[in-house]
Length: 183
Ligand SMILES: CC(C)(COP(=O)(O)OP(=O)(O)OC[C@H]1O[C@@H](n2cnc3c(N)ncnc32)[C@H](O)[C@@H]1OP(=O)(O)O)[C@@H](O)C(=O)NCCC(=O)NCCS
Image 1 (tube, helix red, strand yellow):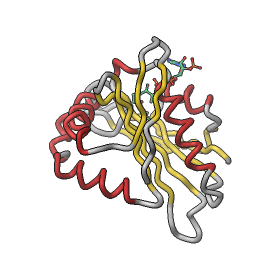
Image 2 (cartoon, rainbow, N blue to C red):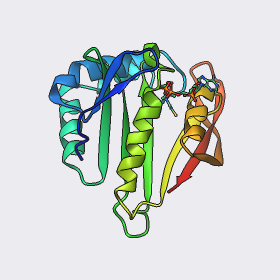
Image 3 (tube, rainbow, N blue to C red):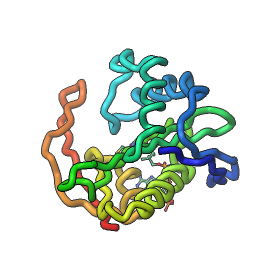
Image 4 (cartoon, rainbow, N blue to C red):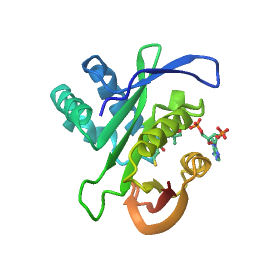
């Protein structure tokens, strides 16, 4: 699904663009994937696991998602730099097509500027245009208070916990919380 370009103003007054990913974003996306992996324990990859991301793979992903009827990716660009992205995908099976799964991450330099709020507003709009979807779902890792605050502000509530879902390199075990937003 294509998400048309939209300009937003961040909390610091700087302009940012939200839109579907394009081929020109591939180098910025690869850099974002690698750098963000080393900036927080709250996403699922470590930097050394980012070798699997390639320009060809990103192009295939962008092409597939942009052509899909049940998936969208929104990138945020600030001064032409990829600040982060979010993805929404919903199932197509009769028993599960009422559920949309979302995920989001930004480079640290762009946290707390309102990008997450703007991205969720867009994803909620996408869901509203599909009457089959009655709930949005996501997960966050124990301790991610910023993400939790954003998700609660956007109407999500905790519905469950998976104990010890994450094990960091130093052996620390962290729970993963599931959240749902009813439409
Ligand atoms: C989580 C993330 C996507 C949020 O996006 P963001 O653009 O920083 O979020 P916003 O600026 O729109 O909103 C954050 C909200 O949390 C609040 N907040 C920030 N730090 C907080 C904290 N430590 N505790 C509670 N609330 C906090 C902010 O005040 C803001 O609320 P407000 O708009 O009502 O003032 C982003 O910080 C990020 O990419 N983090 C690293 C990767 C990650 O954790 N991804 C999510 C995986 S589940």
